[in-house]
Length: 128
Image 1 (cartoon, rainbow, N blue to C red):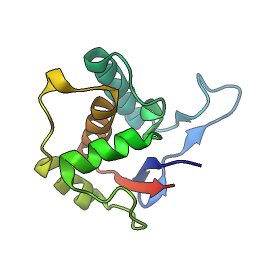
Image 2 (cartoon, one colour):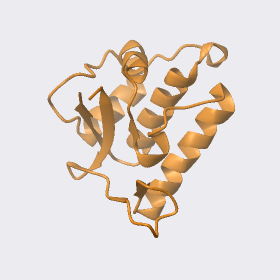
Image 3 (cartoon, rainbow, N blue to C red):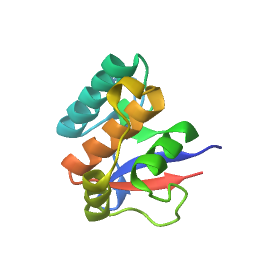
Image 4 (cartoon, rainbow, N blue to C red):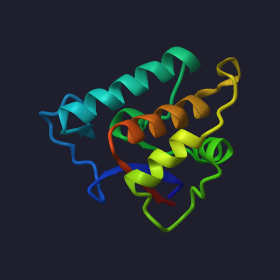
């Protein structure tokens, strides 16, 4: 098992649908958050040509994204503590991202994940 980051609401991971009826496995149940992470996914794809495969489902699962988050924010992406929405918002507001023309898929994924979490009042849970 590798590094992962998951968006949280009220301290719990977002509820996802893995049933056969879901449009895709792992689809976020909340339509507002599903739309927000879908847009994050699309924007990242437009800029970098590729994104972390978990982004549209409210997460990141590649350690390259952890390093991008760490480099932009200074956050400990291997912390055992869940990040509250307030802490996420702080990191979002204080982040220093490289110029967009230097972004790769990991930076774009980390940027849009953190932005979406901050703008929607979500926390972050890390796992590895």
